[in-house]
Image 1 (tube, rainbow, N blue to C red):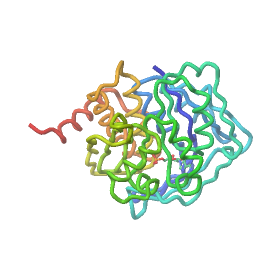
Image 2 (image 1 turned 60 degrees about the vertical axis):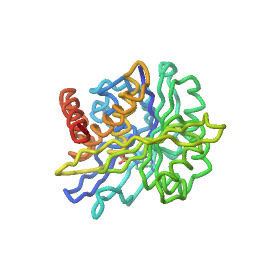
Image 3 (image 1 turned 90 degrees about the vertical axis):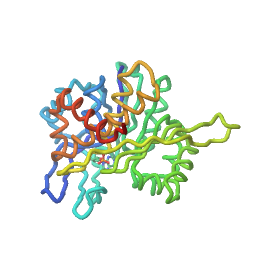
Amino acid sequence: MSILVVGSVAFDSIETPHGSVDHCLGGAATHFALAASYFTQVRVIAVVGEDFTPQHEKVLTDRGIDTKGLERAPGLSFHWTGSYVGNLNEAKTLGTDLNVFETFEPKIPAAYADSEYLFLANIDPVLQARVRSEMKDVRMVCGDTMNYWIADHRESLLKVLKGLDVLLINDGEAKMLSGEQNLMKAASKVMAMGPRILVVKHGEYGATAFFCDRSFLGASSISMPFRAPALPLEEVVDPTGAGDSFAGGFYGYLASQPEFTPAVFRSAMFYGGVMGSFAVERFGTERLQSVSREEIEARFQLFREISHLE
Ligand code: AMP
């Protein structure tokens, strides 16, 4: 099974209480693809500039990620500057240099047309919608977004939400998108915008999945949510990409399974937490480049143990 992801491949300059890094490889699609690559085949659509070297691409191809859809354009790659000093749970964006993303027109290689799963990572919703419209026959569409698009590009975002099966956002974004402070009310309003499943990430506190039940007199109501824990970690070096890595573990695991049962879905929530917990242990994508399957399974067992009731 293949996941096609469209999103940012970027350079990040990050400051956390543990130090800072300048122009390390990042981007929503990069973190997602690396995390998902431990479970299934991943194909990437993004644009990079002349500062993106073969060594950077090798980080992806070493994990078996298909980079045929990585376009090279004259100029510099997308560059994001963020700080977590003061709040490890929420990035403060200090700078967003779109660079080559400003004129990006996603092109889907013919070899990607048979992808079964589509992930619309954090990127301009206009671009997300374009890729969605060209991938009509996928089995499932899952998407992400961020406060910037919710605040300033709402109309385009609402069009994307209509075509999603699953939306993954953090709790602040769910509240911002819905205008509701209560999580249940926020979830209900967000799901009325399109997605039938909503996964709300709570940073270091785990994630909650909400399921839409549209069978009830045609109205949309939500059934009992499912909450997965996060692993309490002694040291969080860099939270950048935790959300995308959660999404990669979650969606990668789902795509690797023959059918979607409630048990498979619950395990996917745990695998999301597992990959998010690895991502934050080092700056940038460093940790996600070298996790082993054994480490993933061992951590999955830890997740089971910390949330098991006899
Ligand atoms: P996360 O920490 O999982 O929410 O995502 C962090 C990643 O999102 C970083 O690697 C950034 O390069 C990327 N990012 C930040 N702002 C944007 C944006 N406006 N559009 C696309 N990607 C972004």
